[in-house]
Image (cartoon, rainbow over all chains, first blue to last red; front, side, top):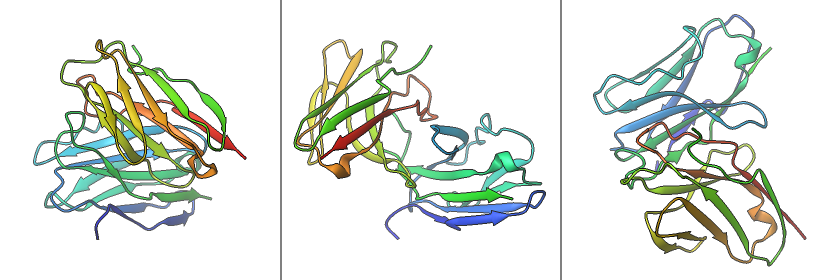
Length: 116
Length: 109
């Protein structure tokens, strides 16, 4: 596709279960971001991948959160032992280079996670 | 220090021009200024980006004074569908795309 694709679009899970969220960035984009947005709130940075460099994980809220990016393309965000406070929309963005120096960021539609 | 400061909300009517000013006093020499728009239940969407003076596209104009410590997003003749949150972003040597609270623009009939 032409844009950033995220799946699933909606996910309802029971407290304590693990979930995996997927992001397919735009082909050729070297940078990939994950964000979390709670209802009525701004975007909270989670993790950043740039090419083959080590990811910046400084935004991950706890060790229950992890992410990987395979082959410099698809990324998976995993949340273990989900808690109700994990309920939010998880957004992925890709950038064809280093953001802030010219290239723009393209966002997916997000995955709405509800922990019951 | 906050990277950017913008009004929390603005109200307007259909057909009017909306101007949102963002302050970024600590902007770095190589930084571009980028604006995004977000509708409810959607990811942010790029609107416009600029480095200096004026940039115009089919959606908006961006005015940047010579000192680059602020910028103004101008939305001409807004419609109800322009109701959204608008974010001003400046990297300031940080690649994390830090989104603040943004400006909630409400367009009324």
